[in-house]
Length: 341
Ligand SMILES: NC(=O)c1ccc[n+]([C@@H]2O[C@H](COP(=O)([O-])OP(=O)(O)OC[C@H]3O[C@@H](n4cnc5c(N)ncnc54)[C@H](O)[C@@H]3O)[C@@H](O)[C@H]2O)c1
Image 1 (cartoon, rainbow, N blue to C red):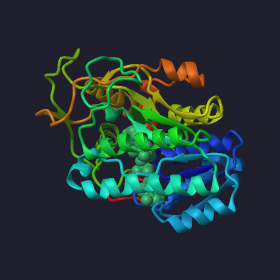
Image 2: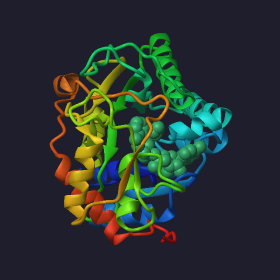
Image 3: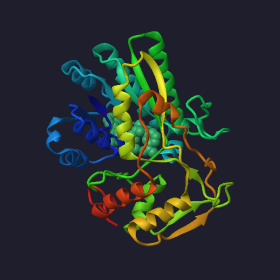
Image 4: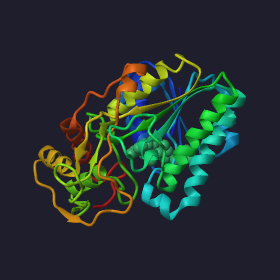
């Protein structure tokens, strides 16, 4: 397997899952949003199977380096995680987002077209839907991305669908993740974003270790049970297993398909705060502030297509997500590289 973005949050957990399931993995990353220590941790967590990980520091935008790697190794399939992923940052830096996310996918597809394999799993996002009319969200819900990041994901999906339509020997699955959280239960691997976390859970993790003063809850007047926003949080280890299931089913049919990876369970910000507080043993400081532009009341998946096509279902609940995320943060309060509080 070739895994791009292997040192990132989801990539690192997926590498561990693949290695322990017996796959040989070549991971690539340019560490734009991750640490080389994550690669050491993948090997450590995978134990003996860690010897089957080869790592190459590489920018996926570098067509020459990518071509050389693909020409030299007969890969069975590729999982493409490498991308910029922060919604807010994408609004401020649209050019960088379009450049990295679109060009990384285009360079990769060109290299695969030349050297093979024409078998690819692509990281997409439920955020391509924007504000939805119908819940839970099915794969055929309309795409109405509301920011540059989500537009890059939707554009990449369309590019990949067009490639499959033009050349029938491609097998591509786009996985639309809901809200990945949690960490490997060892506490050795987890989410360690550079700078101020954009997402709720890593922010909360940093509040819990004193790196951030308090959590801002953006609005408590949504039409939800407790007034706070509802999302579909999914344990990153479930997500990693979902990638393996997608790999194992890539040959079921040629062409392009899209599969939601979510739990189908909606959890509010308030519920997450309470569960994380229970995991770390204290109530976490938070303040309700105004709603954030572009946020919607509730988003959660219809996960039934993943069960039907991949035989995969998420099995880990909210308490496990919070327990594992806290274990990672407790053991690595400053993240992989020991950032100051
Ligand atoms: N985490 C989420 O909430 C979420 C939700 C939906 C989709 N996704 C998508 O899943 C994928 C993985 O997300 P993540 O949370 O693990 O993010 P991440 O930032 O932790 O991982 C992405 C990795 O890609 C690397 N990378 C970026 N540009 C690169 C380049 N040009 N060449 C080589 N490596 C490069 C980064 O250094 C990083 O290690 C991304 O495509 C993201 O858009 C994430």
